[in-house]
Amino acid sequence: MSDAPNLLGEYLRARREQVSPERAGIPRAGVRRVPGLRREEVAMLAGISADYYLRLEQGRDRNPSVQVLESVARVLRLDDAGTAYLLGLAAQRPRRRRPRSRRETVPPGTLKLLGALGLPAFVEGRYFDVLAANSLATALSPRLRAGRNRLRDVFLDPAEQALYAHYAGREDIAGQLVAGFRASVGNETDDPRLVELVGELSLASPDFRKAWARHDVTTREGAVVSLDHPAVGRITLNREKLAIGGAPGLTLAVYHADTGSPDADKLQVLASYAASDHPEPRADTEHRAAPSDQPSPRE
Image (tube, rainbow, N blue to C red; front, side, top):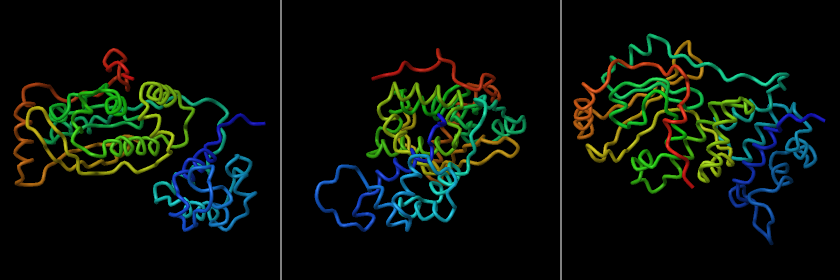
């Protein structure tokens, strides 16, 4: 029997647990022993047999049709990103050898662009490592510099967490980060870099462990971000995330303020602070944060 991980089954079970009977239109009656929907309820709503759905979750049917998967996705209330992820899991083929972590190199033209932008910007890799950043990004957060990792900082660094202390739903922010990370790494869960990072964070952060177990998936996209900055106070910026051509898995993140807003003035103040602090952006040659440069895990 194959010892390959059952990623499709893990995802289906995790998402099934997130859908309440009421949300699926099923009257709640009696005591339910499982969170979310039962397998037979998913099967019924998707128009497939309970036995077939059981085979899907147990990994005994690795080649379901797109039509079946889209029906299941509809029952599990998956959005476009979640549905695409589900289809990708079903389409994967077992690998014969353990993969090596991909080497991530920032194109020289992107480094020049970082230095010329005049806006906070950094390059993020598929493991959410900061591969390069300009001085204004580092002025926005000292953790936005080459060698850091966004997941480690958001879950383990109190100074980074303080930037978002005003959010009532801080767990949602962290959860969105994890959902984007899961989408970024896809189904390559035996990637050594991924195994190391997820293992470290799962041991050090109950919040990460909880978010990772949900199997949420979302695309890496723009958002409005509000930070409690120690120098300029509350600042609200638009963050755009753009794919870098010719560099698969790398994303350029750029922050900008609404024209004429107080936030634009605050960004100018930060720009003046940053002007003489750093030279041109440099890429992280190690492609990961050095252990000595990271905060110690907290309970």
